[in-house]
Amino acid sequence: LLAAQDFNVSSPLDEFSKLQVRALAKEFGLFNHDYAASPCLRSRLAFGVTATEENLRRIERAEQLVRQNLQIGLQQNMRVRHISSEFTSSNSISSSSGERPVGSARIELDGDFLQGLQEVDGGERLQRLAEQVSQLGFVKVVFQPFRSGGVAAVRRETSLQL
Image 1 (cartoon, rainbow, N blue to C red):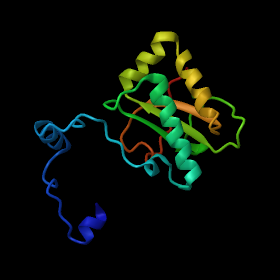
Image 2: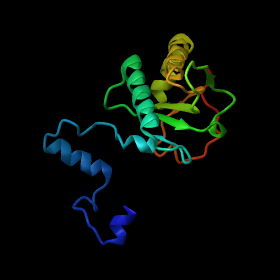
Image 3: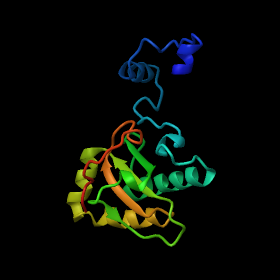
Image 4: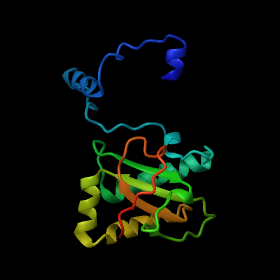
């Protein structure tokens, strides 16, 4: 967006809010009018985490695991973020990995959905998922409510304790 401003690039959608764009998409019959936003995988890597093919594929595989295991639809918000250890909480799920450790993963899900998962079985399903994700090479896996732009925020909030 900054580059667009610098070079005086305009978009026909500049004057519309996200809700208005979604309403127009629905009116035009676009099947994806209510899909959750899905920015590029690079946006899942914290500042300082190098955007290597290996790191991007690891995030992609982790997101596939989460979607499959939790049966998350395209309308639900979900991100797996590759974060450094300094961003994790002491109240998070920890799992060791057999692969070379690469840091921590933060799995963000819609808040009500995450809370429901924790309540159903005391978080056992989330614990099993954390172990599967850790096998991709993450030292620690935490779950938190989804927050748009969450990788950019340095947060020391308490993660959901399972």
